[in-house]
Image (tube, rainbow, N blue to C red; front, top):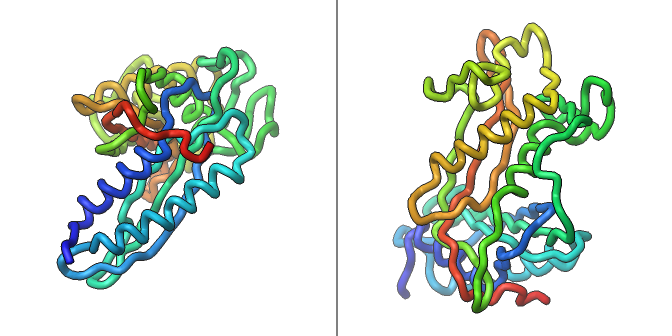
Length: 267
C-alpha cells in the first residue's frame, strides 16, 4: 500500500491530533505536559497509512486519558506534538507531548515581584526566602511567565489549533550578538561563567525581569514568518569543560495557527 516518509507522517499525525483536540484560544494560567512513547512498524519506503491510523488511535487514548486524569481546573488541550525520536529499517519510536492549559479566571502576575529570589537552577528560592519551593527555580518560573505573556488567539468559528511546528534552541553564550553590557551576566541569555568556582547564582527580581524581557524578545526575533509562538521552555544545564560554566537553554516552539478545529472534543 501507499506509504508516507517520516516527516510527512509526523506532520499528518500532529495536525490531526491538534485539529481534533486542540483548543488554544483561551487565556491560560498554567500548563502541564504529559509524554507518551509508542513504537510503530515501518519499511524502507516509509510508514503505511494502516500503521499511521493505528498510531493515531493509540495517541487518541493517550490525549484523552491525560486530559481526564489531570487535576487542572477549567482545562483545555492546548497543543499536541508528535515527533519521531528514533527509527531503523523496521520500527519508529514516536514521542508525543500533550500540553494542557488551565483557563485563567482572573488577572495573572506577568512580572517578577519583590519575593522572587530564585536559584539559577531548579533548586528553590534563595536570598531571604532560602529553602522555599525546592522543586522550582528560575527556569520553571521564567517558563511559566513567558507562556503567560504569549497572548490570546481568537477564532469566530471553531477552535484555534496548530500545525506546521518548528522548534528553535538558544543557549547562553552561543553567539556574539547575545552579548549585552546591561545584562546581569553579560549575555542576553543567562550564563554563569564561574559556576565551578562560585556555585549557583541567586537571581533577584530585577535580574529575572531582565531575562523575562530578553527571552521574549529573542523568541520574537527568531519567529518564522507566518507562524505563532506556541510555547517557551527554559532549561538549566552545566557545560562539561575545563571551567564548568552553567547556562540557560531556551526552546521555543512555533507553529501555524489555524481556525475551525474541533477542539473540546473530549468535553
